[in-house]
Length: 584
Image (cartoon, rainbow, N blue to C red; front, side, top):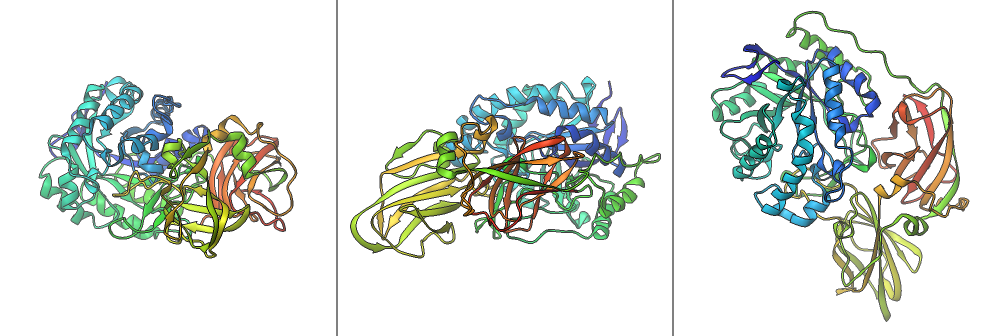
């Protein structure tokens, strides 16, 4: 078996210097049937390695309940078959613009700000998770015939905390779990980040998108020796709902990549291929320099302006990067693999059934809770989805302002069954006062949990209370609708025919496909919600943009009829066309 080691100035493979030319590709953002194609695209670009995170919350949706952890091992097997090496970043925190930075919401709801510290309740959960996860990685290390060269300790911890003892605990857990591969940390090239995020005896790497010499100089102030590596070369960026689409000039990005390699460093392109945050798993950020400002939810697409786009196609950046990387490899590069099949012709969906949101909640929602104050999503066991809160305004009383304190993130409000407005964290007060007696319903939606910064792990829902003038309204009924509830199908939902008003609710219909293949789904009449095809949740849609369509991997579609579910949380324009598939 081969041996990979961290030398004094270079990585060594069987004692000989080797440069890692890696690219990030998240197995959980790519349909499994398309892993071989995307890995082949990385090889064709000139890479010899692939890097992936592992999202804990995807694989342990409830404490002790595990879901397809074997996907990690299957992906690493596909990496080996593709002739690539692998870098694995198992967290437990990963950021990745992923819901809650990969930490389960039930966990952060349980431990709060003690997450990512040596708190024993938190570390106990990490131990249990690592006991389940690590065998998938350990058995596929290089010294056992697999592709895994390196494993990361936590992720960018220096951007969050200073408890290096916590990092030591995690490194110990990895070693105790059988990880013999080289360990490393990755942080921004700033003194406080490298001080808080690195460990003696563990390779330190840095993350940046430009000014390689300055970044590596900062690293050398902390680590005079060891191989240089940019663990995240940010060759693109991600998008927020209602924001601008982020792009980076391919020529400029290629110049900066060449600058990294001219320093004699190894590199990991972040992202080489971004994929899609399907299933409603996209995270969110907080604006402002200190990441304490307004919520900025991430879009469903994780295209990232990467060299291999969301649909798996080579971009101009791909060809420019390939030219740069070819100078640092021996032998000719393979060409891109054949493109997966593409939808042969456009197809429109016909939505013939509809159920209002209360009926959907009644069929698929969790148990109703009655509490003095509004329970959070975490207390109700809701990860991704929405919660209906009901509270009474006593009366008789004159009209007063109705305000929701601690709203995260958006609420459609009904007063005595009539829609009264939409509230947000920035605008938590109804425009029109409410008189009593009245029945108030708040349909509160999470737009994605924060994945980076000090607000990581914050609760969702109504986290403060409902105020009528200055008086708290007590006695709250709450019931959650988690997206996972749709995994078993919607047969229990009492569908009728659409009422023609475009009201919110669950719409169901079919789209007939001829020549199944990769497609994009347009939703011209819809406002905000989630969509499924054949039971696969494609993710959130929102007319706020900048994303205007959703990627549909070809393996999700089948010849003939395909079932479509549209969970609209605002309104559908009945005068506009319905969902439509188009070739990518």
